[in-house]
Length: 162
View 1 (cartoon, one colour):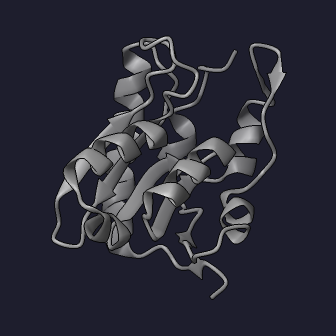
View 2: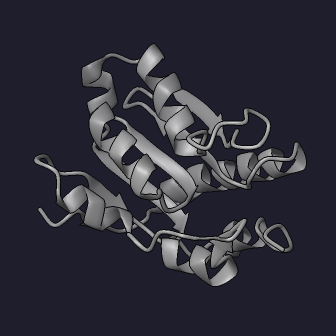
């Protein structure tokens, strides 16, 4: 399995919720990223970025939602779940997703698309390491779908990274 998959109309509904969460994170002063985990039976766990308000550089939306989902879902439920996110997971978040056992990831804005918006954060260059490359190094498949054609996923970043 090469980890490639198409974004479906059903996926887009969840991605739009992630962008709404990203907007809420931004509005409260955090970086504009939002994620959800959806279990096979339809339970939804939501997470937002808390890097600024939580004073935690690991408080990305994806790592936060993985922690929350792992507290609510057992290993089999996690393995059958999908993680949706407003922006492609970074290398750190991809690692957290991999270790959680979640087997499918869907994202809106690509890592390269984000890099076009923000080349560095507070003087630190962004990592140029797509999630598919991180997952490809693991010993189990993680199916990845994205980027999705959602202009609002880029729009939520407009003017933030200046």
